[in-house]
Amino acid sequence: MSATTELDSDEHDVESIDDDAEESIGDSKRAGKGKIKFESVMQRTEAATYFGALVDGLRHGQLMFRHGEQHLSLAPAQQVVVEVRASRKGDKEKVAFELEWRRSADDAAPLDG
Image (cartoon, rainbow, N blue to C red):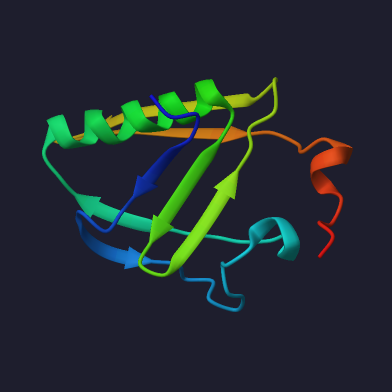
């Protein structure tokens, strides 16, 4: 298995993406900023595969997201803040996950050349 896992939204029926298109998402380390957002309807087994790839990337310390020409690479720190929200309202059930971390001083420095 490779050391990085790319999470690709192109294989799914994407309903909405990146509502913050003020900046190109090419080299996120150089730019210091980037955002990719998508929403998709998929089979439960496909969702499990997608989240499995996310877990693998977290385990290896490298998350690579791609949607069309947009790419965003994230390097999770050793300590992450995990937020889980679960709810049920009528016949609608929802689980939301959020991971957050601060980059180390070495990671935040601009890349040369």
